Image 1 (cartoon, one colour):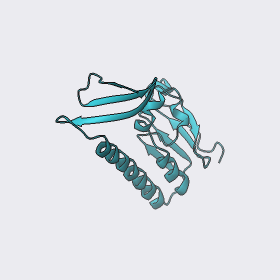
Image 2 (cartoon, helix red, strand yellow):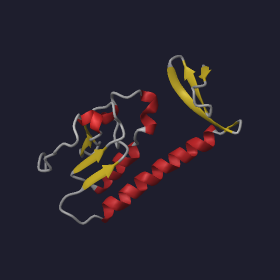
Image 3 (cartoon, one colour):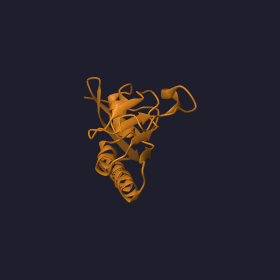
Length: 145
């Protein structure tokens, strides 16, 4: 294992060969990785819980789940594995599958794949401009309905 201090003086990256295995956050000289990671994980759980509640309250003919972060890894394949946790979470996908949607849209991941599917079969599209290559795109909601 080796440690690398990037230009950010608040972060240390721990590698096992070439694979990033840990991020250690430092504040005022103390390492607080566990606290920061717990905070990060809690934030993800809160986002998924909020999405589930919002989708569950919808009473409409069409449901579109719009998130900033990716609900699946299918649309992250061009990104480095070590940053997947910062680009999305399967918990969002579980919320979408639990409540149902005709389509899920997300951005945030800029070097990725446009199309994917949740484990429950809901279509997911990464609409980040660098991915779709234009200002907007049109999706057919009747497709596979």
